[in-house]
Image (tube, rainbow, N blue to C red; front, side):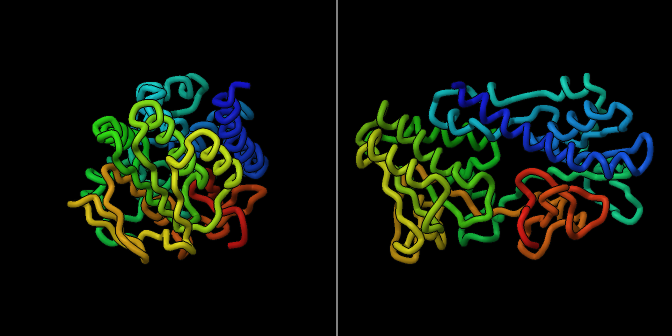
Length: 326
């Protein structure tokens, strides 16, 4: 089985399902309803395409400031040297061919009462329904010593692109016998199993190229999705190369010192040759500007329709939403 195709299909399937669930209420608004989708990642792009394909009469507009999208799924393979960064990069040409209007601008304000989106260039878009697919923002204020400047030395690589390549270069430059430390935040976060996938792929690279090196996972959780499968694979494939310190064992990172690549926990300090610090996260900023994010920083939704529980006529899909109680 082609697992990459399966994962890609699952992501697009989820976004398309969100679009199809929202479609009946969108179409009731008017015959040629105006639907604006903010965010051109997997969720937003798939939703815009699915809406237009399902009902060609819809006026679907996708708002995304970046003309080239660099995908996070499979970016761990780039870090491990199994895939080039160019394989992660896509344009929006194929979506435009389907009849979706692409607006290459940043959305800076949303007026839910007027049903209007304001863009960074001063332009506006009126909508009947709005779909937010803002992804995540990193909370640079949540971990002492870690800010955007620190990420140039201790990359998070949690948004694909320059950070992905930086972490890759650091692994290539490290000495055989060096220590790679991954700092993993508590949930909710984007793709909770991904840090452990990353640890596995980094270990694969080290086993092949720098076999005396180690990977240390400092985890703010006691358990994680598919833990048994990961730990069995680590034991079988990598011997003692990967060590994980869970929350109850003192694994929660409390601060960092970028100048010395030092990561501090409640129980001690670790100096890494390569430090991958993944900070806590929240929904992308446009969600808060729309009033769709609650005090947790995430967006509570109706899990059947993806409708915001906080703002009418707005749906939230992708990493930013919480489908449970809200």
